[in-house]
Image 1 (cartoon, rainbow, N blue to C red):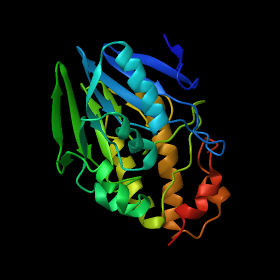
Image 2: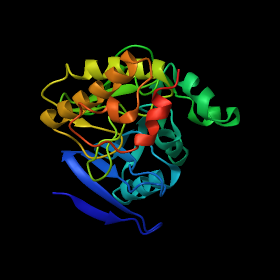
Image 3: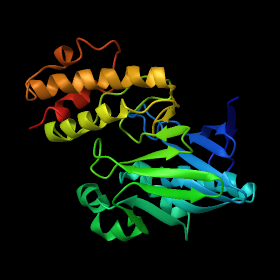
Image 4: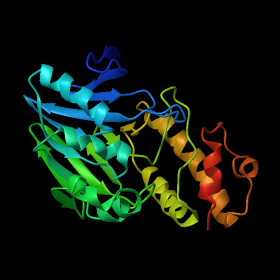
Length: 264
């Protein structure tokens, strides 16, 4: 059952759900009025220690910190799915935590983050091949994939869940967002990553934005994203939005991102 919590320190409503024993998903409302997708943080708890997947924005991370601290739980490790600010900024809150991230993290930081802040977000442990992280009774497998971001990691949690980062972006109401890519070349890499995701079965899929999806719904979502990306790649970006989505069986959020996706 979903439980709704209000963080007393900031008064921001968020949703917390126990996905399995000791595995919690926090989800927040959109951080800006112009956004429709809220951030999320996954907490995997063993005794009084926790591993986080993503750290969201600093204010959101603070709420998770307070919720865990109230239960005597300390964050020991943080896995950053990719190095965009809405996934990594909150590491500032968790002093002393070991941070895991792709060895390609710097390529993304160079694009979006002031160099003066790179030291804040530099991972403690760099992942350059599939990496098994054992945490108490939990096994988290970190898998390199280049899609929405060059430094994206997929995280398999106990063979039960797959955290898919921003390969799939949903609103808190469950609507699918258009891919957000910086041009055709990045769209090609995301199409490749989405096709790889079609090979994952028997899991519950957790996007960084939006609620978890069962396999059937997840594959529907992936198929719609692939249809769209195939159209813009085959046309070399010379396609209007309505033609790019004509075979999709959903209405995407953020149609204005189409122009950026078609950039050459």
